[in-house]
Length: 145
Image 1 (cartoon, rainbow, N blue to C red):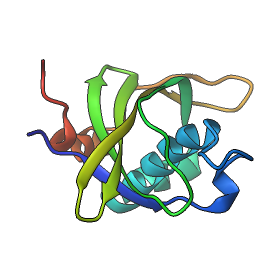
Image 2 (tube, rainbow, N blue to C red):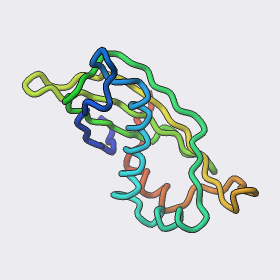
Image 3 (cartoon, rainbow, N blue to C red):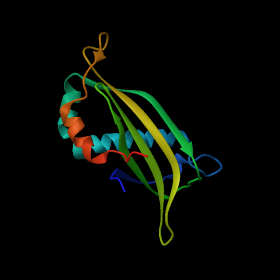
C-alpha cells in the first residue's frame, strides 16, 4: 500500500446542516487544512518561501461522496501526490471514517490541483515547484494503477 500524509479531524456541529450530515463545502476546507498541515509538518521551509513571494494557487478541486458523515465522526483525511509537473502539483484525498471496532469506511475521495506562482500580485507568473516541496512530497506518491 502506498504511503499518505494523514490529517485527523473530528466533525463538529458547526460542520453539519439542518439534517445533521456534513455540509459538502467542509470536505474542500479539509483538503486545504490537510495541505496546510503537510507544509507545517513536512516542508516548513516552503512556509518561509510563502512569506516571501511564492504563491500556491488552487486551480481545481473536486470531491466524490460515497457515504454520509455526522457530528463527532472521526475522520482521517489522507493526502497523496498524484502528479508533480514543472509548475503544478496534483493531490488526491481519501476521506476515511474511523469506526471504533468496525474498522474504516471510505466516505469520499477528492482531488486538488495547485499552481506555483511568483511575483507581485498584479504580475504573478508560473514558477517551478520548489525543490523543498518536491522532496517533501516524494514519499507520498500515489501508486500507479
